Image (cartoon, rainbow, N blue to C red; front, side, top):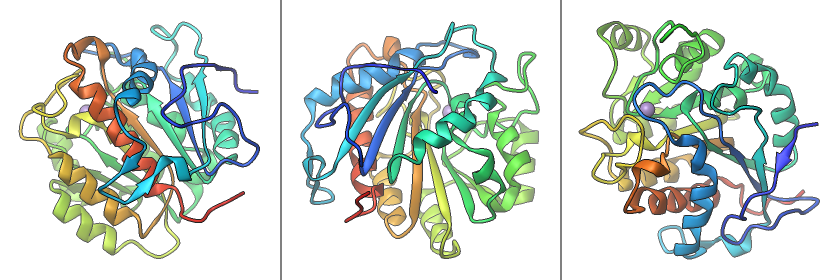
Amino acid sequence: MLPLAPAPLFLSARSEHPQPQAQIVGFPYEATASFRGGTAFAPDAIRTFSESIETYSPHQDRDLEDLILVDRGNVVLDEPFRWAAEGLVELQAPLSRLKAQAHFTLFLGGEHTSTLAFLSPEETLDPRFFLLVLDAHLDLRPAYQGTAYSHASWARRALEKLGPSRLLIAGARSGTREEFRLAREQGFWVPTAEALVERLDRLPPGTRIHLSLDIDVLDPAHAPGTGNPEPLGWSVEDVLRVLQALKGHRVISADLVEYSPPHDPSGRTGVLAAFLVREMLLALTPSGSSK
Ligand SMILES: [Mn+2]
Protein backbone atom coordinates (compact mmCIF):
# COMPACT_ATOMS: atom_id res chain seq x y z
CA MET A 1 0.00 0.00 0.00
CA LEU A 2 1.22 3.45 -0.89
CA PRO A 3 2.04 5.49 2.22
CA LEU A 4 0.34 8.89 2.18
CA ALA A 5 0.93 11.72 4.66
CA PRO A 6 -1.82 14.22 5.42
CA ALA A 7 -1.30 17.78 4.18
CA PRO A 8 -3.33 21.01 4.30
CA LEU A 9 -6.29 20.47 1.93
CA PHE A 10 -6.45 22.21 -1.43
CA LEU A 11 -9.30 24.72 -1.71
CA SER A 12 -12.71 23.02 -1.40
CA ALA A 13 -11.23 19.49 -1.34
CA ARG A 14 -12.21 16.94 1.27
CA SER A 15 -9.83 14.43 2.83
CA GLU A 16 -11.84 11.39 1.82
CA HIS A 17 -14.84 10.22 -0.18
CA PRO A 18 -15.63 6.72 -1.48
CA GLN A 19 -16.26 7.87 -5.07
CA PRO A 20 -14.46 11.12 -5.91
CA GLN A 21 -14.63 12.60 -9.39
CA ALA A 22 -11.19 14.15 -9.05
CA GLN A 23 -8.29 13.73 -6.66
CA ILE A 24 -5.11 15.63 -5.82
CA VAL A 25 -1.94 13.74 -4.87
CA GLY A 26 1.19 15.51 -3.65
CA PHE A 27 4.51 14.11 -4.84
CA PRO A 28 7.33 16.06 -3.12
CA TYR A 29 10.11 14.39 -5.09
CA GLU A 30 13.37 16.26 -5.54
CA ALA A 31 16.62 14.46 -6.24
CA THR A 32 18.43 15.87 -9.27
CA ALA A 33 17.99 19.65 -9.33
CA SER A 34 21.03 20.95 -11.23
CA PHE A 35 20.86 24.72 -10.74
CA ARG A 36 18.64 25.48 -7.78
CA GLY A 37 16.08 23.37 -6.00
CA GLY A 38 13.06 23.72 -3.76
CA THR A 39 10.42 21.76 -5.67
CA ALA A 40 9.86 19.38 -2.75
CA PHE A 41 8.10 22.24 -0.96
CA ALA A 42 5.69 22.87 -3.85
CA PRO A 43 2.73 20.57 -3.04
CA ASP A 44 2.03 22.12 0.36
CA ALA A 45 2.81 25.66 -0.85
CA ILE A 46 0.32 25.34 -3.72
CA ARG A 47 -2.33 24.18 -1.23
CA THR A 48 -1.57 27.19 0.99
CA PHE A 49 -1.82 29.62 -1.95
CA SER A 50 -5.15 28.09 -2.96
CA GLU A 51 -6.57 30.03 0.00
CA SER A 52 -6.11 33.21 -2.05
CA ILE A 53 -8.25 32.19 -5.04
CA GLU A 54 -11.97 31.52 -5.52
CA THR A 55 -13.50 28.12 -6.22
CA TYR A 56 -15.38 29.61 -9.20
CA SER A 57 -13.69 30.10 -12.57
CA PRO A 58 -15.28 32.84 -14.68
CA HIS A 59 -13.08 31.63 -17.56
CA GLN A 60 -14.93 28.31 -17.64
CA ASP A 61 -18.14 29.11 -15.72
CA ARG A 62 -17.46 26.09 -13.54
CA ASP A 63 -16.98 25.85 -9.79
CA LEU A 64 -14.84 23.47 -7.73
CA GLU A 65 -17.74 23.31 -5.25
CA ASP A 66 -19.65 21.31 -7.88
CA LEU A 67 -16.96 18.61 -7.99
CA ILE A 68 -16.41 15.77 -5.57
CA LEU A 69 -12.73 16.54 -5.03
CA VAL A 70 -10.45 14.65 -2.66
CA ASP A 71 -6.97 15.72 -1.58
CA ARG A 72 -5.07 12.55 -0.66
CA GLY A 73 -2.11 14.34 0.92
CA ASN A 74 1.47 13.59 -0.09
CA VAL A 75 3.13 10.36 -1.16
CA VAL A 76 5.72 9.57 1.51
CA LEU A 77 9.15 9.34 -0.09
CA ASP A 78 12.06 8.21 2.04
CA GLU A 79 14.88 10.72 2.07
CA PRO A 80 13.25 12.88 -0.60
CA PHE A 81 16.40 14.78 -1.43
CA ARG A 82 18.63 11.75 -1.94
CA TRP A 83 16.10 9.17 -2.95
CA ALA A 84 17.24 6.77 -5.67
CA ALA A 85 15.70 8.04 -8.90
CA GLU A 86 15.34 4.55 -10.36
CA GLY A 87 12.85 3.91 -7.55
CA LEU A 88 10.34 6.06 -9.44
CA VAL A 89 9.64 3.05 -11.65
CA GLU A 90 8.71 0.97 -8.60
CA LEU A 91 6.03 3.53 -7.72
CA GLN A 92 4.27 3.22 -11.09
CA ALA A 93 2.08 0.26 -10.07
CA PRO A 94 0.86 1.60 -6.68
CA LEU A 95 0.26 5.05 -8.18
CA SER A 96 -1.69 3.43 -11.02
CA ARG A 97 -3.96 1.73 -8.47
CA LEU A 98 -4.43 5.09 -6.75
CA LYS A 99 -5.33 6.72 -10.10
CA ALA A 100 -8.08 4.12 -10.58
CA GLN A 101 -9.88 5.58 -7.53
CA ALA A 102 -11.07 8.74 -9.36
CA HIS A 103 -11.97 9.82 -12.88
CA PHE A 104 -9.17 12.37 -12.93
CA THR A 105 -5.97 12.57 -10.87
CA LEU A 106 -3.81 15.67 -10.55
CA PHE A 107 -0.31 15.17 -9.15
CA LEU A 108 1.55 18.07 -7.56
CA GLY A 109 5.35 17.73 -7.99
CA GLY A 110 8.15 17.81 -7.31
CA GLU A 111 10.80 17.95 -10.01
CA HIS A 112 9.94 16.92 -13.55
CA THR A 113 11.48 13.44 -13.21
CA SER A 114 8.39 12.70 -11.07
CA THR A 115 6.31 12.32 -14.23
CA LEU A 116 7.96 8.94 -14.91
CA ALA A 117 6.23 7.60 -11.77
CA PHE A 118 2.81 8.73 -13.05
CA LEU A 119 2.94 6.59 -16.23
CA SER A 120 1.86 3.04 -15.43
CA PRO A 121 3.22 0.02 -17.36
CA GLU A 122 -0.32 -0.68 -18.64
CA GLU A 123 -0.63 2.87 -19.95
CA THR A 124 2.72 2.89 -21.69
CA LEU A 125 1.77 -0.37 -23.46
CA ASP A 126 -1.67 0.95 -24.46
CA PRO A 127 -1.56 2.22 -28.08
CA ARG A 128 -4.30 4.74 -27.19
CA PHE A 129 -2.18 6.30 -24.41
CA PHE A 130 -0.61 9.68 -25.14
CA LEU A 131 1.77 11.91 -23.15
CA LEU A 132 1.42 15.65 -23.63
CA VAL A 133 4.19 17.76 -22.08
CA LEU A 134 4.16 21.55 -21.72
CA ASP A 135 7.73 22.54 -20.85
CA ALA A 136 10.37 25.18 -21.64
CA HIS A 137 12.93 22.37 -21.86
CA LEU A 138 13.06 19.29 -24.05
CA ASP A 139 14.65 17.18 -21.25
CA LEU A 140 15.84 14.67 -23.87
CA ARG A 141 19.46 14.15 -22.80
CA PRO A 142 20.48 10.46 -22.81
CA ALA A 143 21.66 11.01 -19.20
CA TYR A 144 22.64 13.98 -17.07
CA GLN A 145 25.13 14.37 -14.23
CA GLY A 146 25.65 10.63 -14.02
CA THR A 147 22.05 9.44 -13.92
CA ALA A 148 19.65 8.30 -16.62
CA TYR A 149 16.77 9.44 -14.39
CA SER A 150 17.32 13.18 -14.20
CA HIS A 151 15.02 16.19 -14.64
CA ALA A 152 17.06 16.85 -17.83
CA SER A 153 16.68 13.33 -19.25
CA TRP A 154 13.29 12.07 -18.05
CA ALA A 155 11.58 12.82 -21.40
CA ARG A 156 14.18 10.66 -23.18
CA ARG A 157 13.10 7.76 -20.96
CA ALA A 158 9.44 8.51 -21.81
CA LEU A 159 10.28 8.69 -25.54
CA GLU A 160 11.95 5.27 -25.33
CA LYS A 161 8.77 3.80 -23.83
CA LEU A 162 6.16 5.61 -25.95
CA GLY A 163 7.86 6.35 -29.26
CA PRO A 164 7.45 9.64 -31.15
CA SER A 165 3.82 9.04 -32.15
CA ARG A 166 2.49 8.99 -28.57
CA LEU A 167 4.40 12.02 -27.25
CA LEU A 168 4.22 15.76 -27.83
CA ILE A 169 6.50 18.32 -26.13
CA ALA A 170 4.99 21.78 -26.50
CA GLY A 171 6.48 25.15 -25.63
CA ALA A 172 10.08 23.93 -25.51
CA ARG A 173 12.67 26.59 -26.24
CA SER A 174 15.74 25.25 -24.46
CA GLY A 175 17.92 22.20 -25.06
CA THR A 176 21.04 21.07 -26.84
CA ARG A 177 21.45 21.01 -30.63
CA GLU A 178 21.19 17.20 -30.45
CA GLU A 179 17.97 17.33 -28.44
CA PHE A 180 16.33 19.69 -30.95
CA ARG A 181 17.59 17.62 -33.89
CA LEU A 182 15.94 14.54 -32.37
CA ALA A 183 12.70 16.37 -31.63
CA ARG A 184 12.51 17.91 -35.13
CA GLU A 185 13.39 14.69 -36.95
CA GLN A 186 10.81 12.69 -35.05
CA GLY A 187 8.16 15.40 -35.15
CA PHE A 188 7.06 15.56 -31.52
CA TRP A 189 8.13 19.16 -30.81
CA VAL A 190 5.46 21.87 -31.03
CA PRO A 191 6.65 25.42 -30.22
CA THR A 192 3.37 27.33 -29.89
CA ALA A 193 -0.02 26.85 -28.25
CA GLU A 194 -1.75 27.50 -31.59
CA ALA A 195 0.18 24.71 -33.30
CA LEU A 196 -0.50 22.41 -30.35
CA VAL A 197 -4.26 22.99 -30.53
CA GLU A 198 -4.13 21.98 -34.23
CA ARG A 199 -2.23 18.81 -33.36
CA LEU A 200 -4.71 17.95 -30.60
CA ASP A 201 -7.54 18.20 -33.14
CA ARG A 202 -5.90 15.37 -35.08
CA LEU A 203 -5.60 12.93 -32.16
CA PRO A 204 -7.61 9.76 -32.78
CA PRO A 205 -10.86 9.34 -30.82
CA GLY A 206 -10.42 7.26 -27.69
CA THR A 207 -6.97 8.64 -26.92
CA ARG A 208 -6.19 8.62 -23.20
CA ILE A 209 -3.92 11.51 -22.24
CA HIS A 210 -1.59 12.32 -19.38
CA LEU A 211 -0.84 16.06 -19.31
CA SER A 212 2.45 17.10 -17.74
CA LEU A 213 2.58 20.83 -17.07
CA ASP A 214 6.01 22.17 -16.16
CA ILE A 215 5.35 25.64 -14.79
CA ASP A 216 8.44 26.91 -16.64
CA VAL A 217 6.58 26.63 -19.96
CA LEU A 218 5.22 30.00 -18.87
CA ASP A 219 7.34 33.07 -19.37
CA PRO A 220 9.49 33.99 -16.35
CA ALA A 221 7.50 37.24 -16.23
CA HIS A 222 4.54 35.12 -15.08
CA ALA A 223 6.32 32.24 -13.31
CA PRO A 224 9.76 33.27 -12.01
CA GLY A 225 9.60 30.84 -9.07
CA THR A 226 11.12 27.81 -10.74
CA GLY A 227 14.50 26.12 -10.92
CA ASN A 228 15.45 26.91 -14.53
CA PRO A 229 13.43 29.89 -15.82
CA GLU A 230 13.71 30.37 -19.59
CA PRO A 231 12.84 33.58 -21.49
CA LEU A 232 10.34 33.84 -24.38
CA GLY A 233 7.75 31.65 -22.72
CA TRP A 234 4.02 31.14 -23.01
CA SER A 235 1.35 33.40 -21.59
CA VAL A 236 -1.27 32.24 -19.07
CA GLU A 237 -3.82 32.58 -21.89
CA ASP A 238 -1.80 30.09 -23.97
CA VAL A 239 -2.13 27.47 -21.23
CA LEU A 240 -5.87 28.17 -20.85
CA ARG A 241 -6.29 27.78 -24.64
CA VAL A 242 -4.68 24.34 -24.45
CA LEU A 243 -6.90 23.32 -21.51
CA GLN A 244 -9.93 24.44 -23.50
CA ALA A 245 -8.80 22.29 -26.46
CA LEU A 246 -8.30 19.32 -24.13
CA LYS A 247 -11.93 19.46 -23.00
CA GLY A 248 -12.84 17.43 -26.08
CA HIS A 249 -10.43 14.66 -25.06
CA ARG A 250 -10.15 12.14 -22.24
CA VAL A 251 -7.38 13.29 -19.93
CA ILE A 252 -7.00 10.62 -17.26
CA SER A 253 -4.31 12.34 -15.21
CA ALA A 254 -2.07 15.38 -15.12
CA ASP A 255 0.79 16.84 -13.16
CA LEU A 256 2.07 20.30 -12.27
CA VAL A 257 5.81 20.22 -11.65
CA GLU A 258 8.91 22.39 -11.08
CA TYR A 259 7.36 25.11 -8.92
CA SER A 260 9.99 26.19 -6.38
CA PRO A 261 8.59 28.10 -3.37
CA PRO A 262 12.03 29.18 -2.04
CA HIS A 263 12.51 31.11 -5.32
CA ASP A 264 9.12 32.76 -5.13
CA PRO A 265 9.47 35.49 -2.50
CA SER A 266 6.49 37.49 -3.79
CA GLY A 267 4.24 34.42 -4.00
CA ARG A 268 3.18 35.27 -7.56
CA THR A 269 4.21 31.88 -8.95
CA GLY A 270 2.45 30.09 -6.08
CA VAL A 271 -0.80 31.93 -6.76
CA LEU A 272 -0.45 31.11 -10.46
CA ALA A 273 0.17 27.44 -9.63
CA ALA A 274 -2.98 27.30 -7.46
CA PHE A 275 -4.92 29.03 -10.27
CA LEU A 276 -3.64 26.48 -12.81
CA VAL A 277 -4.61 23.59 -10.50
CA ARG A 278 -8.15 24.97 -10.30
CA GLU A 279 -8.36 25.47 -14.06
CA MET A 280 -6.99 21.96 -14.75
CA LEU A 281 -9.44 20.35 -12.30
CA LEU A 282 -12.37 22.21 -13.85
CA ALA A 283 -11.35 21.64 -17.48
CA LEU A 284 -10.18 18.04 -17.30
CA THR A 285 -12.52 16.31 -14.83
CA PRO A 286 -15.16 14.63 -17.00
CA SER A 287 -18.43 16.53 -16.58
CA GLY A 288 -21.26 14.55 -15.07
CA SER A 289 -18.87 11.81 -14.03
CA SER A 290 -19.69 9.91 -10.90
CA LYS A 291 -18.32 6.68 -9.56
MN1 LIG B 1 11.33 22.63 -17.64
